[in-house]
Length: 272
Image 1 (spheres, rainbow, N blue to C red):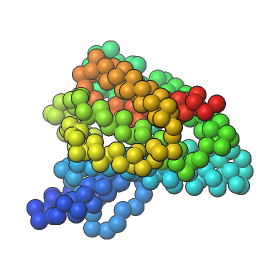
Image 2 (cartoon, rainbow, N blue to C red):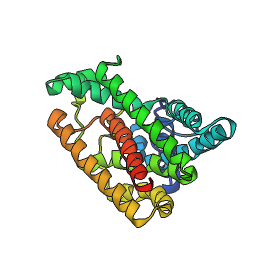
Image 3 (cartoon, rainbow, N blue to C red):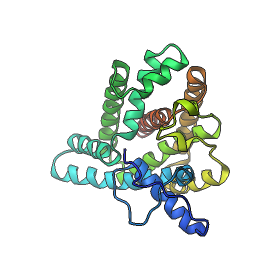
């Protein structure tokens, strides 16, 4: 994960467009390995407000990955192209969400108390539960994307849509759940600036990329994807509350990976 290069405070003279510009690139740097333009300020306040742009970053990354997939198919074949696309995804994001998925399953699988779960999730070592979750989700994503691509799915909308869609449902966790870690035990957590509610205005901004891409789907497909995503969100949020009484950054990363995997399976079921 890229770390912000500085922590300057916000200027009180910033205009609204300037604040949004800095907030967008706080999300850009936090969730990708891509370079940012000069002069961007980084601090907790801007990162807090950057949550509305997580779907935007996802959509842009999805477009880049669509290019990798098409080029790989031109040079080789669909299965290898999808494998290279997934590898490019890991490089572009620094495996940020996959790391959250692994930590989530290691913690929830290996910890019996709330304190043990949170402690395991902070451990940088990869355990059996996390490794199994990574292998299964990567394999399912590879098989699903390969099948969808071979059946003629337009990756130019599907990849950015799925990337934005999964991030939207992951960040929607902030609508209802509190941050799980105590402040005094997690002063240096890189996810702590995200520990706020996700309000109506932020939700509206986050929906823009989805509204721009969802027109490619039939109403039935939209309904199926929405019902599946809502169901998974309910299940995950109850799981988070029961085990740790809230969420952490690893929970958000794991939710994104699971939402992406589920969306691919739903699409595959609807198309085939």
